[in-house]
Image: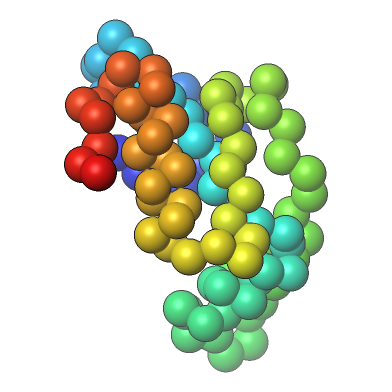
Length: 102
């Protein structure tokens, strides 16, 4: 399951909706300027309104403990495949999935 939440309450709502015994909450992190560039590259700017990318540029430090985040994975300078492999390894290490194929 992938979800983008802005509050601990919203995250807890997603976890509750899954109705599973165990979860691993992974925060994919990039510096605010990198996140803004990524969003801008994917989304069209709406005339007269700020873009989602500009909202990312104002994002601050990730606080894990109070948000229910188990692990933060830094994505800066990494390929999507590399990040996905790290997340799969984390899931495997916590016995949430079978061993990834070598």
